[in-house]
Image (tube, rainbow over all chains, first blue to last red; front, top):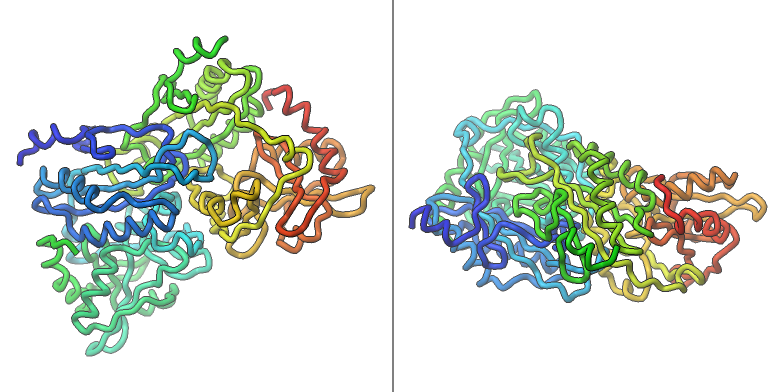
Length: 297
Length: 297
């Protein structure tokens, strides 16, 4: 399907962006929506290739879990699958962002009535320009000054309260680095602003892969889940646990994961230069078929 | 001015709600707005009486401070004043909610370009039905299980990341109480979900008024500021400091403050019954003229 025929199927926005609002082409949202007032919703950022949405089942599972954790019923999977598919099919590569909010409310105030009807927004963005250096030589990363407040009830969810990540990305030095790692308010390592982080250590013949437990803050990424799953399948020891900046300093390899980009080796952390190592390369090779040929799960 | 003539001046929404979007009557927002994606904005809830916005200078001051703290330029005061005024003038009593977001962005991701243009939303709601018992006999209050994550960079701001307050208001028991007090993740007393809290103790002839310092989380309310100011003017000792649940238990009087409702005595805290005391009554009398006849500051 060509671009021009696709545009008739979805609302057009600036920047080559198209969208569906509750399944209807459109570009606007009611001012009464609680998503706008309070960030009262969840989202997924889904890589779409050859018209197919990558890791869609995992994305929809997290989305539904997030809605339930916030106390509202998620939209039916089939509806979301259909809407993502309608947008994805029109482009060879695109990013479809799903936002599901608790919906509109005519009454002010934080309390939900329980009678809200969730709003479904599916927004297609052009695939971003990629820097091949990031995958090959590694990303330059710093540790953000901004820390993440701790709230176990929200930990893991990809909810729409993202001011901490925004502020981390606006710190001095942010423009010179591809990503910022964030600590929790109690000083634990959590994640990047838009990535999860993995540390490699242990002997070369039986390395250990560790990623911070997402139990007090941070997002439990889809690609993080895939990395843990594929490592286990391949017999690589991989675990979630409490990690601290000292663990970061002691790691022999560090890499970042993200649903769109897969794995980025960390090539620089503050003043320290790292070389993308054998475990990182092995994980990259292991994931590549899953990234190239989107299957459902 | 009558209701019907007013409706021609602002966008109409369900529930008797009217709105201006960047000064233009309307009821919808672009899907590209970062306010929707990330809660990337701030808000004010302004009581309007006889066509005038109460404590408007204080509201606009906090709003502008919030925009700057999030790293974007606030809209000119005069524009916001004009838009609030246009909505306020049409009703004898109303609530005007101002939301200012960082604005729309065609590029995904947390990083702001710095070239966004802030979005101004002014939304008028009907004045809510009031329960006179709350002002007279006091509110029934509980301590929420949900705690507030700590982040000094966001403390005090009335920003649009409000999932913690929403979850606190949806806990079992929330429907039976007028408000829930919240503790920070480290266990300090912070505020109610939509109010600030004041504790009274000390000898009857020279009582002491204390409210939690808003330095790690919570909103620094406009009415909180007015209470502190008016107490100081009247020679009542009033201070902001670290407070804990034990201080709550030891207080002889407790009251809540909020820009719309002024002061609510706390009449019940969990299993404990309190009687609205002389200091609370004195503060209520002191504030009443400011609530009845809105002046600017």
